[in-house]
Structures are given as structure tokens and as C-alpha cells.
Image (cartoon, rainbow, N blue to C red; front, side, top):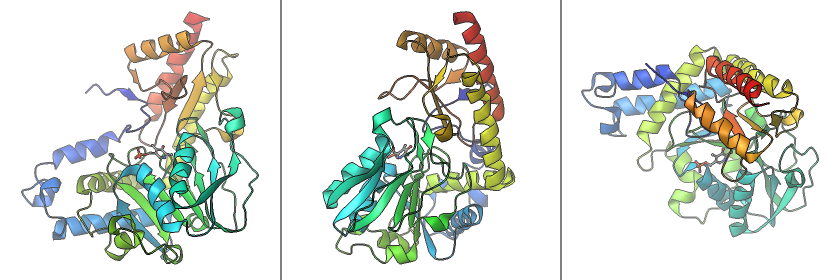
Length: 357
Ligand SMILES: *Cc1c(COP(=O)(O)O)cnc(C)c1O
């Protein structure tokens, strides 16, 4: 079967084995004579799937017992709102502005009180990760974006704060090991590293959840999801099912450490071409902040970039154009993108350079 070299930024590549398994059992899940999308979310079969998905996440991310795992709809964008609605309870909320998503999160925070930038990388077009932060008294939380999908930067290690830390891991969850204990709340939309769009994984410290604002509509409260095992209303069963399969796949690959090693090898293939190109390709991010998930680069002119993307497409590479807001080129090498795809892209980039220098 002809599969594209898929470098889409999101939704993005899924492991082939996961898609094949889902296909094979689509009409008859676990001998029920029904598709998983046709059965009650209160059925024993679905309950087992739901519980196993949480258990797998807990195991793979080593999530401590005093953290709640929730499945919520509305995408990462709704988490910008929910985090602020629940936790912006003091005078200020702090945001580290490392790009478009961080700014969007901050914009939602403003609905619930004052917000400010604890640090910003805007002065250099978000090509780096700040390392000094200003936190004011009366700050409810600081919000970080672990991986900046559009600019191609990521925290290599996470700073420590004296206020609660909320982190958007939408584009790098399970791509590398993180110490969950250092965060009060982590959220991640599934469609980059974990499954189809439609579910967000939220991991939150129980003691932090207890500090949330109470006067909120039912569906905006984390407490609703926590108290009802994310089954207050119908959860996105198909998305959770696909996440479950992806988590099994990650485990079969050897877990998060093995995935992280592979991700480093994949990204290196492409960054090495950029670094060895004598300036034909220019990486956007400074080396210390380079994302292993989203590799962003430029060619000499927008015309050349357009041609590169078009010729890449003709050669089978999908999704290598930059984000519509920033232009340039971007290869997203999420967990499910195979090493061979990155090797093929690296070869294509070298060939393209030889032909266009
Ligand atoms: C894609 C993305 C989002 C937005 O996700 P939606 O599910 O489209 O709302 C938020 N944060 C980051 C870091 C992302 O990459």
C-alpha cells in the first residue's frame, strides 16, 4: 500500500499498525457485533477501554496517584479557556509568550482577570525559549507551552516556579519523558501525538483541582470531569479508543524512552541537512531550543520555498509548508512518523539543494 511521507502538523501521522487494527475491528469490536462507535459509553466493553486508557497513560507517563486523568472535548483551545476559568482566582495569571498558542491561551486568561507575560520570545520572532521569568505577587498560575508547534522551539528542561504551573503539551506529549510532579496541570489535544482530533488529555494534581473556582457552568468545571471519571456526559469514544491503541503502540515500541530516542534520531537527520547546507537551508530556532517535533526552516526566498514545497509534494512529502501565519517550511516529525520518512526527506532536501544552488 502506498502511504504518504506525512509531515502534517496536526492532525498528523498515526502509526500504521494502529490504523490497521482499528480497521480490522471497526465492524465488530471485541466480539460485540458492533462498532466501538455504536455502543453505549456505559457498556462493560467501553468501561474497560476507558479504564485501560487511563491506566496505560498513568504507566507510560508515570503519573502519580495524586493526579487525576480526564478526557475532555473542545481541543487545546478550550483548555485555554478552562484553565483560566477554573484557576485564574487571584489578581494575576502569568503566561510565557513563546508563540501563537501561548498568546491565544493568554487572550482567554483575560476574561477572568489580569494577565501578564512572565517572559516572552517575541523580540526574536519566537526563535528561542526564555530562561528568566518575572512572577508578580498575587499570581494564580504560570502557563507554559512545552513545544511551540508553529515556531519549532521546545523547552529542553522546564523552569521551576513558586506558583502553580499549567502546561500545554499538545504537540509533544509522550514524545519524551517529563516529570509530571513538576506540573499542577498538563493538557494535550490528541491530534498531534496521540490519536484523532476530538479528545484532550488533562492530567491534574488533585490538590490543585481543589483550589478551582466553584461558580462555573457544569461543563467548564474540571470537577465535573474528575468526579464522574470523564463520564458525566458522552465522552468522545472513538477518539479515546484510538488513543488507547496508540498508547499500546508506544508501549510496544519500548515506552517513552525508546520513543524519545527515535525522535532524536529522526530530527537529527533533518537538522544535520540544515546545518550542513552552508546556509541554503536556515533553521528558524536557535540550536538549544530546537523542537524534535516541528522542524522549521527557511530557504533564500518565499518563491524558492514555494517551489521546494511543491516539488516535495510531487515527490510524496505531505505537509512541509510552514504555518500560514509564519511561512517558510516545517516538517512535523511526531511519534508516529517513521525514521524512514525523515531519512527520505533528508535525502530529498540534499537533492533539492544540489539542483537549486
Ligand atoms: C494545535 C495546538 C493547540 C490547539 O489545538 P486545538 O485542538 O486545535 O484547539 C494548542 N496548543 C498547541 C501547542 C498546539 O500545537
